[in-house]
Length: 98
Length: 186
Length: 344
Image (spheres, rainbow over the protein chains, first blue to last red):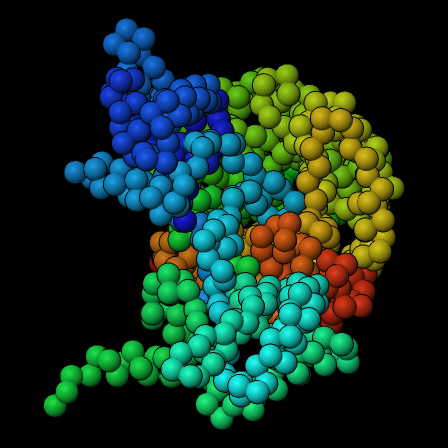
């Protein structure tokens, strides 16, 4: 199983992003909130309703913003990684049973 | 294109997990108590839908005149067998005994699941002690031994073996088999 | 239960064998002057570039005393915004301005060694008067500057009665956590082992008696928290040797980064792969369940049993009657360490 580890140099810290948080981080590539919402819902439906996906997305975007992982541009209303923040995938697996 | 590939990989990861987890980004903490160890989350041991990474199946027949007695034996003792497995051994679960009837032949299947191949070794300690559990296990097994057509099969979750070569590292005959599969017929 | 990393996430740089103190228990057997064979500034900066290019996210810098290297602030400045940077120090070279500088260049956390709650205990260990006051001052300065700061100590016979007082002191001066480390039979500690080593019972009593003040984190690795962290461990010593973990320094050498890229040592050295696989003879079920790893510390298992897959005698469940106050003869003889790889 893979997780994404993100480093935020402005307030030095490391965070582990689970798969859905990782997708949101990846999708914050300068797109608008509306496009982000659609892309996230497309990835999690039908196991989330549109409303659930939207609420979840609002929660994680706020969380990632607070942690300095992404930033909003209020003028053009887009989301992108905060400058300097970088992530990498990390394979962490259990080979129990092998 | 590289972005798409990475994104597809993340989407595939979400898909493989089944139910998408609630998005979370907790801090990754390093504790310094021997070498600095990161507290990285481990994946769940058991896949949610699975009854076990390893299954053992006993298949055996019971003569028609003994079926009622055997079924009563099971009714009386299965809960006890299951409880003993849970209490006396780690990672061993009794999964029940089932009968199947067809073409005049009644056959039984008894299933055991193991949390890992190593858990199969738990029987050695449990079987050393004289106890009611051993007596009942011996009786259950005796129905299996009396059928000359009996069989015992071991099943392993196929999804755990995605790299045959790595799986064969400690299994010489499997290594031989993999090598043999590459030999072209003359 | 075994877990593995495809590629390492973090690395320890045991960056110098020099120090401004003369600690009685020094594992490195440090000297006052750095050796000319230590990695140069250019080599360290190249190593940092290599780490960033290869996906490392964190570097933990210790020594010796890292700040005793004249180029240390330049190195920290170079890596501070590229990697999560942790610095372990005796604190004697950190005052207010330096603490603010460490904050400005992006050091993520500093860990300061305090070997006792009393000046006499700490200074006696450090071999210089005034060390305790300067170390406490460093913690306070770092906290004032906004640098997350922890205190580390090594549990031994000379400070065992001061552990609770040390927790309270650390909390008072603003440390977020205290790490109580076990004593390892390495360097000078090995040579004075009978005077400083505690029995396992004495250690467990000391750990169990601790009552950390509210808000102070406690890091320790006794039962049921005995962690086999080899699976994630990567370390390069002051001379460029890949050694897995600082506590394996006298037992292993997976290759020198001057001749072999670090990741080649990670992927190709058979012993390194073996230790990371987590295969052990036996494991304490409670430690396995809480830590997600088997067998506990490989360094102490190897030190006391001479086998890499032996159980860790520092866990009360797998101690097997080993008296931790007595070192095996073989450990006191010339180290059986593999020769260092030739440097190009």
